Length: 434
Image 1: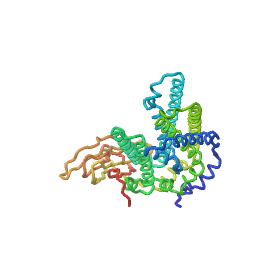
Image 2: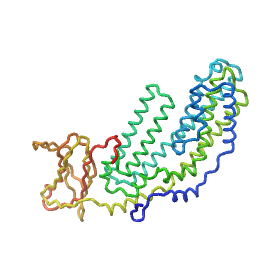
Image 3: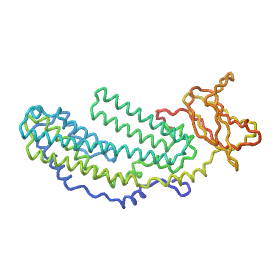
Image 4: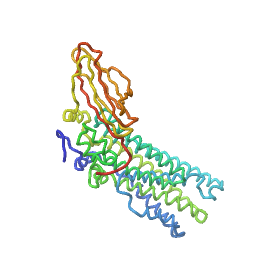
């Protein structure tokens, strides 16, 4: 296992010792009791009216074990909550229920509205939980990257990728895709994110070109991103410890959805009685309370989980090991130039430079030019004087670019320039492997 000055990627054994200190208080016994009652009510409906082909698919899913991965269960809970909310919308009630206005029906309709509101609030909490989790992981990873243009490029890549994913979802929805279709796509996209995280660690796929230039990235971080989601990797301990209560909640909301779906389809022949309504109400209450309790607990565990060492410590250690800056003396009255050949449009020319300062603070002129094959020069970044600067430029043309540090205005003082330059080809969305 690779290490740098005592740093090692997190292991399953390390997480186990951490999770020992954070046991989850078991779910209420009402989860098991109400889930069994709901399934018994489902079986009563099926005994009287066999399922349709579409209903059989949902029944088969309810009969299977929930997914093994924690995040897949979270997506499944979101899907089933949203499907249940859809069934609770008044426009999707059975015609008989919509048309009657007896006191009992009015009371029942009010209760359905409250159940829909509770599930809607839990859905929003779940969406927020997933967003915060994703941002926490990404931002923590980013703290270990060099705090220069390269981190910016990875952020830009992530933002571009997320915009493309959202556009894909919007296209599906606008073309009439179902809730099930949308969540199948969302889970596929989540797996794509996992692959990209592993690619960052292995320097393959979309990051194959980019990581080549990430001098200063701790090897411990690359090792972590590559192995974190392995089948028997660190996350397997998380599934072992905290998966079972989540699996129970996934099964519970699926049973609630299945019961409502079958009840609405058979409402003309078998209306819900008082016992059915009471169990349904209790089940939604318990489910929403327990899922939100689970999310609050797991959020705190994840936020404090020692996946990474201090970014400050890691950055300081790696800066000493991977100092790839060059140093040059620019005499008074002279310039220093670096010529780069850029093969592709939308490549990035990036720089980080500073002057080694003495007792007197000094600056140096800096500009960027494009040099055509005929030798004609076009100013791309205007001349300006700096003590230090860190930036990047997205190229509009392939060809030669010249970075110029100018000390011609100085009569007496030479400038000691410390600099680093990279030319990074465009990052694409393709997922090629080595």
